[in-house]
Every structure is written in structure tokens, then in C-alpha cells.
Length: 304
Image (cartoon, rainbow, N blue to C red; front, side):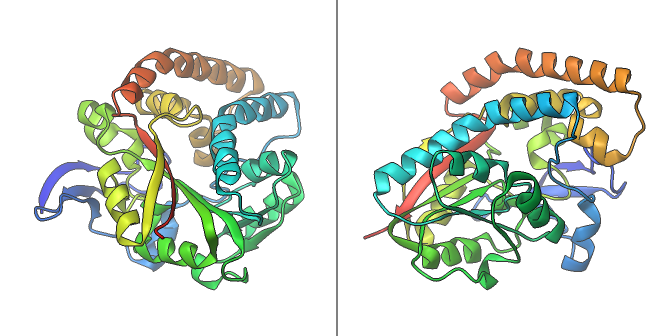
């Protein structure tokens, strides 16, 4: 292997320990080195590692913004459901607070969430009124061949064995069911430009840094064929560039770092960050138009 970059937890500052991102000289896959052990990895995930809306005016505005930027995810999944013709629930792996599932349910989809964290599943139930299970995909109580779709948005890069998750998803899908997966794209221009400061490698939480070709090979090896691929996400691409440039302004990072802010200062930082996100839209759209976007989202089905 060869070393590409060296960095630490720039976003949430859970550790000062340095890690490498290395490239395999045989297959060119990028990965974190050394990998933290399972007992150590949890230290790098702050409590409430997902969005929970505040019950005030700012929280309502945040909710409107998140609904807007999640709308293209919802459309992507909804089109996959319509094209498949299958009837059954959508299982969102790593559902977090469950807002995506709530928006799909509002369109008439049957939904269920799955998350490692009990508190995330609890928030999905209580805040967004969607059923959620705490556990791993290998231990889910969902019946085999029962799901119309399984979604994994920014999940695979966090796993020691992403192939195992893909194969478990295949067992849960109906014959024409769809797998929708999204990961950061390590082949993007942002990684070339910013290196270890690129938000998409998220040291030390991302164990594998996929390029689009790596995701395609993974899915094909697990018995899937890709039907659609998308290099832009309203939720992730522009906001990811903004966070790369000024991680201290990222609203989630500020909350999870536990820094106290007055309401006026918090609002000012939110507005500056929003302005930076808006300014980041044109370059990230250009990047995606050249098939080098900072995220890659795919729709796949099991091979006949």
C-alpha cells in the first residue's frame, strides 16, 4: 500500500490521534490505516450523531431546509420503487432520526428504519413517527424477500465488511427489489484539491473511501447490477464543500462539539454557513456534471 494523506478528526475533534489514508497497490481501494478496533471505534462517534430538530423557530427553519435538501433522495428512491413494481416496505439502513422515511411515508410508501444506536431509533419513532429497529442488518427481524427497497445513505464507508451488508440486503429484497446506496466519492475533484481536509474522508469514522468504480465492483461482486448512478446530492455535495472550507461553522459539528453559543451568535453562524453552502452549489454542480461529484448514489437490482 502507499500513503495518500495523513489526518485526524477535523470535524468533531473526538481525538488528536493521526491516521493515514492508504491505497492498495493491487486493487487501488482506499482505506483508513490503522483501522480502529470495534471497541475503540465507538469513541469517535459523539452522542446524538444524527439530526434532532429543536422545538423552536430555528428548529422549524432547519426542518424546512432538511426537507428541501432531502427531496432529491426521496425522488430517487420513489422512482426506484415505481420502476421495480414491487410492493413492500422500504428499509432504510442507518436511518438516524428517520426524516427520509417520514417523507417517503408521506408519499404513501411503507417504511421501516434500522440503526445501530437505540437513541436514533427512539428519535425516529418519537419525532418522525416511523417504525425503527435497533440492530445490525445481519440480525434484523425483517423477513427474507419482503422488502421493495433497501437504502443505505452514507453507511458502507463506516463498515469493516461492506460486502456482508450488501449480501444481507440481497436476502431481504424481493426479486425485482431495489438497492439504493450512496457514499462519498474519493475520485472527486475536492479530494484532489483539499486532501486530508476534504470532508468526505471523515477521519477516523470512514474506514473505506470508495471511488465510483469501487462501489460498482462491490455491487457486481455481490450479485447486483447498477441501473442508475447520480453524482450530485442537494443534501451533501455543496454542504460538504462548505464544511471542508470552514468545519467550525458546520451546524452539526458545532452542536456535537458542545460549544456554548448565544442564540444571536448561533443564528449568525447558521446564516454565514448557509451563504457558503449556496456559494458552493455552482462548483459542485460542475464537478458532478463531469462525473466527478463528491458523492455517488446508485440504484441497483439483483442480477437475473
